[in-house]
Image 1 (spheres, rainbow, N blue to C red):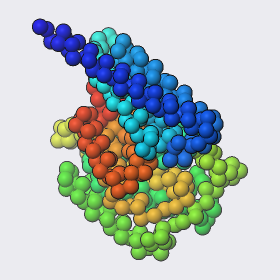
Image 2: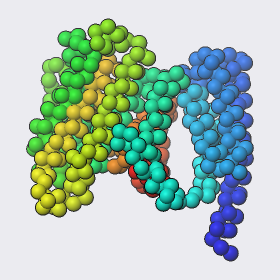
Image 3: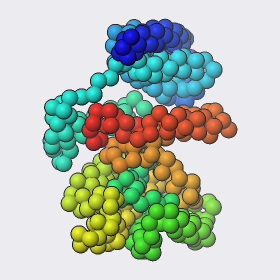
Length: 445
């Protein structure tokens, strides 16, 4: 019996199981949605479903999941994607409790089984070449479509999800993209990037609270602070590589942490609180969450495009050469330490912008921003999304932030659940989520 026939015999029961589990999960979720809609009772614990229009999502989305379960036998890829999409939206609208957890879990399992049972074929060389062809602003065709999808989600999501949650995702995504510039394209692992994120946050918060300057200027000062600090600390650390560089950056970041703990302007353990959002260009009030969201989205897109341009410039090609073989780059006449220092300063500057933007969104800057756990979290975020990919850090930030937000109801078990999910992702997606997709389609994403 051939391998393909054996695979078909295995996929058949898996598809059937996915259909049965998906239908049961979708019908139970639909029952909860109907009860919540007609009784006027909010099933959710997340506090997102707070009106008839959003309660209606609890009816429409399970129907999409049931449709996905119905077609998963004939179209496992599309059916599995619909199941996972509907379950993720239900997670954000209904939240997790004893009533909703079984339904959402069954839809997730059914979606995963559907995707696993799909018969994947490697793309032809002609199709791969077409997707790799340059399109606009240095994007390949595949990257261009991914960028347009990302912009569409940025525009649509604030009308469905909580804008403050989305702003948190965008700040974390910009932080991860800046970190990925160092680790993914230069090959330098920094365990101290929280120092630049936190100092950018502190400077932006202090200038907004005491000087009442324009929001863009305050965020820019946060970025300049991160870049200046990166120049000083990077000059000390950049002469080492590997684990020695990582340990030096961690030690220097801890010095910054204790400075922030003792410095008068940081507020010590209390931090800088009640930071006003101020105005944009002197006349646009940022106190409204939606208005602030569009500023954060613009900052993220600007930083994302800047990083993409750096990566695909001649300077970025030299950085990749240093990552692959630094002695050879040195033999070609490149002053590798200078290139690495410039990349380090750029990464720290964008990180400071992310920290300053975060301070404006939440109106506070605390020691958590400069704590070593923040440095560890951005490493995990980048690895989860896809190291050395353009869109991977943004995907990783979305996954990590969503887990922190929606699993918070689990209390002390949240770290255990996160650890299990991270372990599964690392084992199943060794290149990260976006990295595995790019490897499957033979594309650079």
